[in-house]
Length: 297
Image 1: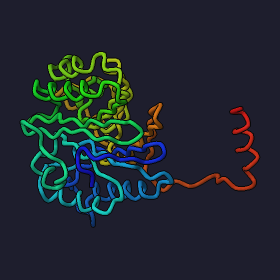
Image 2: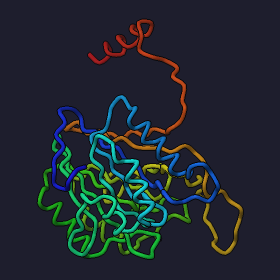
Image 3: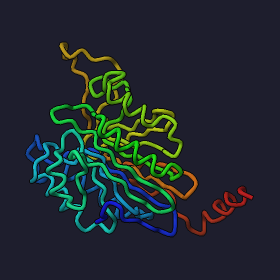
Image 4: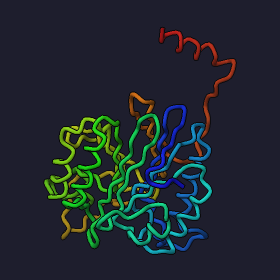
């Protein structure tokens, strides 16, 4: 596992995988194995089968459902033999104590916050933020965390930087999951990031759906969950009037693969399932591939 401050130095494009909102420990039904563990196991299997194995894996929060040591231990055990570094982030369902115990390579910063920086190779810098506020479902970003982030950005103003955090600081339209517009923590984060042109993108979790947006002039993406997905309903919700709308669905788990080649960042998303292969690169399709390459000249 990677110790904060260590460097990954691959001699090709850097691939950063992102899994989010796994929610190990949520087991409402009697099954041979907890549903979220089954989905997590399948996603990790696909990640290992990928033709392009990642250089690191970011777990962007809600690794567990209750923040308990047993759930963290179960998650860590499934990750134990992966051949690349694990970069875990705390989510609102997690606990800092549980995360530190399961991933001892992470060191709590001053104030107890679990934020850190990793040099990822090809000049890329990764900053993992802590947006947890105990007892709160939504995000938080206090003055101490803002000061820490500001210092990290000032110390490397020319380094291409990718920020990961659990809570997206945007209003998505999924009313029951969203922050209120203009919450203090969002304003504080925006103030720190304004004009920070070295920040290539911000990638989050929490919403359990894929979202693309902008924040402080920076591209922002939300990776869908490994656990069951939040239903697509952009209508306002009245907390006092249960309207039988869909809230959670069994859409397949998804992961992201962020590719940095030293000049540009591109994010790919793949759903995990038993898909059929409809075409392979064989001699029959070689003329098509050759023709596509010929068009590049």
